[in-house]
Image (cartoon, rainbow, N blue to C red; front, side, top):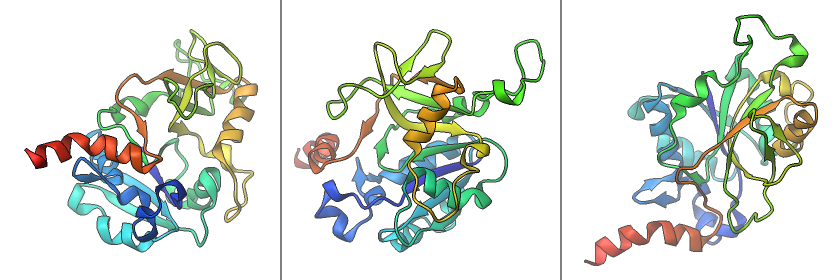
Length: 240
């Protein structure tokens, strides 16, 4: 399995820090956000990684190189302007291949997420070994978390059969971690802007999105206050 890390966002709410540093390179507890992902992916045996970038993207390439120092093989997909998540995937499909792939946002902090679990979530056969018809397969599998303060109403419902819907009570927040079939993005012209959320909702309405709850540490690092809060233990030790 290959993985894609989204790293093209401007990080407006993190300014002025992101005026001179791409958001995924901001450090949390002594390590850039994106490096946490690369190391955890490699630990799970997912070593082929695609990273898209736009704003200050050369800094990301300079920091990570070809990935060999971290045990990975990294390819880059440059965007002149950020194409949003689905648009970024569509542009990078030639690097991702034909098999289902993992995609994760470069600005979330989830240091204990076990990426080993994502490798077999999309099934082509039922429990008896019979192939699913094309219109019976899940097109993606997403991970959901408890609703953070910035998204109190959540995004998706989840049934006891691991089926994701746009309705339901309670609702959970999309963790920006998912596994996707390449067919999902066939209708997006490479180089065009497109968001992933509406595409997931479209397939959820058709009953083709599976998912599960992730209960480990997870933070969408969107503000300087959140970054400082994560780094507070490190700062306290430095003062001791």
